Structures are given as structure tokens and as C-alpha cells.
Length: 401
Image 1 (spheres, rainbow, N blue to C red):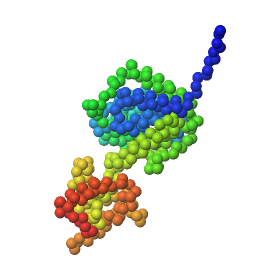
Image 2 (spheres, rainbow, N blue to C red):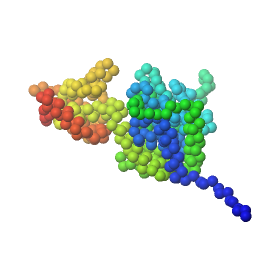
Image 3 (cartoon, one colour):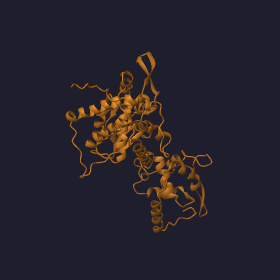
């Protein structure tokens, strides 16, 4: 007896399929990359996937692999990303005009990969404002760069679109305007007990490309779940960090499974880490040092005493800023960028001390800036510095100090 058989149609990809696919992409990274935290694996995996859904989002986060020293796995991380994203364009030392044309002339916008990005923005890199402007503007949909094109007097004004996906790797840090638009992965050298599989491009790139193609197919199947969606953010993530993470959380929600919860935990962790990063803003570093170590428990202090205490802080930049210590004029200029609770610039004021009148700063004038910009104080650290002052015979008081 012959039994009739029926060919069933291929199953339509579901959220569960997306969850398993992201699991595989994460596992592919784990084979060749050692990231500093579990949150980093989650973030990079979601970033890979979001690159296939660029047209669904109003913004696209930059992915930044940064480290203080060479040999920390940044370039290898970028290599693995290259195998997983659409239209990768490796742009080592590319100029802004090259990128203008690359983004505007290709039918499918490229995923731009910058290795050794520190050579572009480092102190000896020269003027790279056009490139910085391109990277900043390309974070948001609809932003473009206007340039004159043509020869001699026969020139016209042309807008070059800049909205595209960008990943970077480099030593040190990046300009603040780029850092705030980035998911930052602080890479470090592998410990002796941390092992990875050697990446052989000829052998392993095809595996990454197969995952890339599956990501593209899955992205097409869930585009309606992602397009124009604004996912629920962790309570503490707002403003620019929310812009950065919205695409990644939307991808996680579309994938389902454990990814929505993992994505929000990773988001909260990485955003909190970026706020604690002292290198993020020299101004915030100054405000924080004034709050925790200089004016902590002191009502007012003459400028000369403020500077002396700033110079004494170990691992702080104030005693050597470009070969010279911070001056009273430099201190006034930096603090003048912030406002008091009365909406006036923070400025040195008169302080009576021993029959003389000196210029200095009042803690009350900085309270509003501390509340708005500084991370929460660490109680143990504050007590430690109070104890050091006690040992030095500098008991906190309400006087001039």
C-alpha cells in the first residue's frame, strides 16, 4: 500500500527562532572574543542584528571597542563583527569626503568599520572636525553633511547623507560627542586562564557569513515588529543613552526568549558604567573631585587652597594638564560653564580669611551642578578622604579651611 505524503511549507521564522539565532551569534563571538563582561556579549550581539534593520530606526548607536593598551582584542572583535554585518566597509584612516561618497553612492548603505580610530582623533591627528561631524550626524536618521562640489567657480551645494552603522576600535578614548552616541566596550588583555579559538579568516569567515545571511532573513521576517517601535527602557536610562539603546532593545523584544530581560540588564549595566567613567568629561571629573575630596564638609575655600587640594589628589590630572598645572584662571573658566541654583554661572567670590579678603568658592554655589552632573558619591571613599585630612591635621569645618 502506498501512503501519500504531503510536503509541508517551510516554517515561518518566529520570535523563538530569533532568540536561538541570537544565541548562535553570541556563541560565535565567544569562540574568538573575550569581552570584559557578560553585558558586553549581549550588547555586541544585538548591535550586529540591528545593523540588518537600519531602515527601521531613527538612530543607530556607534559600537566602540576601546582599551588603554595594545593587544586587548579590539581588532579581533572588529574582525568578527565584519563577518556578521551587511555591506562591511573597513575604513582605516578614511577621510570624511571618502565616507560622504561611500554612504551616498552605494545602493545599500555600508556598515563602516574603523580600526585604529585613535590615529584619527589622537593629539597628533590634526584637524578631523569634518570626520567627527560625519560620525556625529550619522547617528540620527535624516541628518546629512552639506559640501560644495565642482571645479573653480562652477560649484554647487550638495547634501551627503550620513545615516549609517559604524563600529570603531582604538586605544584610549574618543571625543565626548562620539562617546555619548556609542555603546562602549572597554576591552582588556586576556588573562592566562582566558582562552579563545584562533580566528582563521579562510576557515571561519564563511561561518560568520552564514550567520549574517540568517540574520538578514530573520530581520526581514520581523521588520513589522521593529519598525517605528519605541521599546520600554530601564527607569534609569533616559535622554541620549535611551536613543543609543532603543534599537538594541527593539531587536531583543522581536527575538523574544531570554533576550528582552538580558538586553535591559545589559543596558542598565553599560549605561551606569559609562556614567562612572572619569574620562567621559574633564568637567564632570572636576566637579566630582571638588565634591568628594576638596569641599567635602567645607562651606567655602579660597582658590589657592582649592588648587592645592586638587594637586594633591593621586591619579588626578590637575597637577599636570598638558605639562602645566591647573591655574586659577583655568579653574574659573571650567567652573564658569556650570550654573548655580539661581541660574548664574559658578564664579569665585570673596572669602574673609584672617583679616584679608581672598577669592574662592562656596560649596552652596556648586550644589546644583553636583546634583545634575556627578555620579552618586561613594560613602566609603568619602570617609577615606576625610580620614586622610584628619591625619594631616585638616579637620573639616565651616570655616575657610
